[in-house]
Structures are given as structure tokens and as C-alpha cells.
Image 1: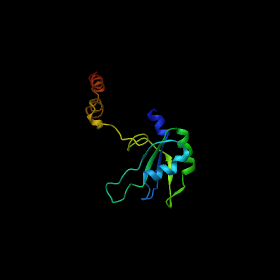
Image 2: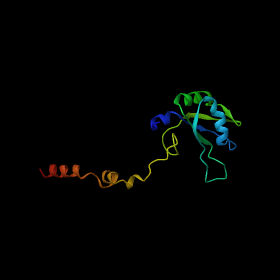
Image 3: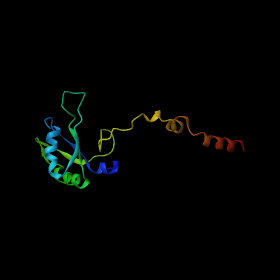
Image 4: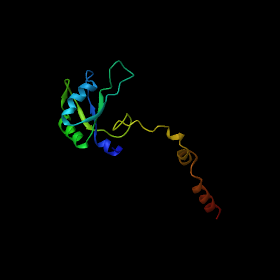
Length: 131
């Protein structure tokens, strides 16, 4: 499955109660289709078991859409959850992107273009100034 397809089949689930575990999230979303992965990021800055949101990746985009349509603004453990398609960005697999493998400034082409500049436009400017 391509990365683009995976974005359409991964849901962001926000507003999770501290008691919600990956197993509970799985049980809540499995009626809508086969789930390939569930992730609830932990919060290293507090004693809370997680950060209050998670990601559910479905095998098929239509299943993810059905889950979103049915679960958005529903109640789970006494809290209203928000369910939307995950956007590419930080995180892990699927809609849970982990970002580039290395810093962008470690790429020599990026450095040339953004830090050192492209000298080709300088040489034509200098020639124009001499005329």
C-alpha cells in the first residue's frame, strides 16, 4: 500500500480518556473493518499513560471513512472523541509519520540551495552590473 493510500486509511482519534488503551481503541473501531495498526503515543513529560490521542490505521480507506462517519463526536469512556483523517506529519507509520530519517541540513543539495546559495544567479547578476 502506498503512503498516499495509507493517509486515507489512517484516522486521528483525539480526546481520549487516560483509561483508553490500544486494546480498547481496537474494540471500538473493529466493527468498521480490518485494522492494521493502532498507536497511542505516550507522554514522557507527565505521569499520564498517553497524550490523549491516538491513530487507527485501517486496511481499506472505505473502512476508515465509515469509522470516521460513525465515531466522530461519539462518546468513549465518558469523553467526546474527535475522529478525523490523519494528516501526514510527525508520529509513526501510516498517518503516523516519523519525518525525515536525517536532518534536512545534512543534505548537501539543501545546504547549497538554502545556505550557500546558488552561485549561477550571482554570476549573471555580476555580468549585468559590469555592462
